[in-house]
Image 1 (cartoon, rainbow, N blue to C red):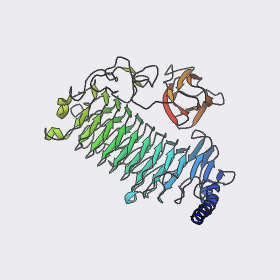
Image 2 (cartoon, helix red, strand yellow; image 1 turned 90 degrees about the vertical axis):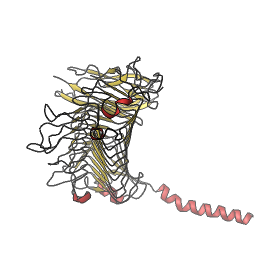
Image 3 (cartoon, rainbow, N blue to C red; image 1 turned 60 degrees about the horizontal axis):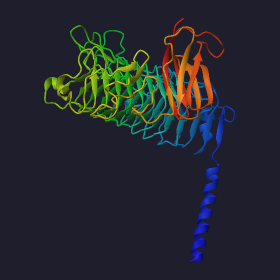
Image 4 (spheres, rainbow, N blue to C red; image 1 turned 60 degrees about the vertical axis):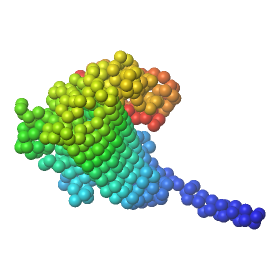
Length: 533
């Protein structure tokens, strides 16, 4: 028995000896010090290595059209996305993107901490289409993409910022998608920020702001089981880009779904637009927030505010200011749909021809104050059933985009039937995480700046529930860092930072929209503010 035991020990020691070199051999390759370019770093790297990129603006060969080659490596910036920019400098005639992930990579392959800007999708997508202006994941490749900013990227067909196709299902965590576009001269441009085609990516705590496409101003999903958790969709636009009269209107101001079953939880859809206007199809725009075709999404604890489906003309209205539904008996739980305009809140296309057609199933939802109607059409009988109501939700401050609820809100957790918050945010106008909040406990709360708009200076308040390393940065609309206000460890409690409208060199900034972003340990939040001179 002793000999057997010693033999087993020997085998363990031999196995450990074999494994140790591989484990201890993981390297950090610094760019541009040890490797001149990111491409050179990838070629030199082995599984487990990290390529650490110094702050700077990088462009040209070696810093775009990057291919991991199936390696399980990390490409990470040293100073974060505001200081580390991959400028792809792509055009329709000379397309370039930042990364092409196509050899079966998984989440051990990581892209972290970059601003990816001015990419244009190559013609290597499905059917030879131009897709993925910033990153293209395909062939089941599913990396982790974290703390990145996708700015001003384009594609001619799908996924201005990111395209996931062919079973690729990356994890996209704490990323910002801003001003990305699909400029298709026709009616089939999909997903200004991201396209999910036969794939199921997971988006967590991402911001989609001011993206544009024909179908899905921010996101379009085809045959997808994608998930969106804690994301914000604001000021995205679905419109058809043609020099003359459009063939048809825009569809899905924020999100467009075909044959898909995404899970959308604790997301905000605010001020997204599906544009109509005169068009050859003589139709109003469809789905200011979300448009669903033959899909089975689940929406839970979402807030829809200020979305719009534009009419074709004075006699042909838009369809579904917040949600448009066709052949999609979706499930909607604990959602708040209020003050959307130019169309009824939710439009069920099927019930117009067949009153017995399947309609969305609502539970514990508040639909109120929408310009053309609330509980109407085929689901009108669901009002006052299953906890559904039509009452003013009493938002804290919609002008400042604070969609938390006042203490006396009927959407609070004390509502006798639901016993849970309706909408994406809880009770509390001064703090964003009290007992009534439906989100998990947060380590950080970022308030809207005051005053906003501002002329001379403004203050930004935030609250930490525990000691954290905090980074608070101001960006312009190009995604470029303007000023770092905070970068260090701060104690639990309330904190205030001030911005005087100047950049890091003391120069006055011009009037316009600016973004302030805070990163506290693993949490990343972003808000907008307006400077007026």
